[in-house]
Image 1 (cartoon, rainbow, N blue to C red):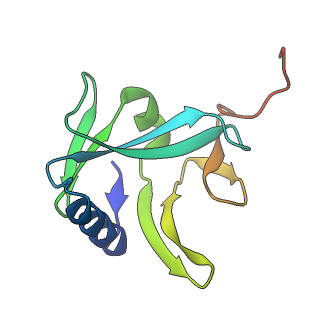
Image 2: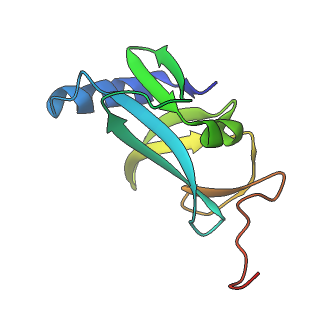
Length: 119
């Protein structure tokens, strides 16, 4: 299960209202890539796909595919507003290392670890 902090939920609702996306849900996923092996992704979608985990929290409908769910179990989506700017971030207990930007990670099992070409 993924949780969304109050600041993140508030920011998402505001964004959705401003862009006329109030009928959409938020897909949260991981994909191979990024400087640490896996990268986080989020996008708005109008419906779930077969096999998705679906949950609703603070008025936000979340969709997580089966592949991503195994790496996002217990993760928290937060919104941080700092001197250097604001943005969404993922606090993930399954990540053993993160890149400095916080947008990619390596899992405890080594899945997603960057590998040289041909390996």
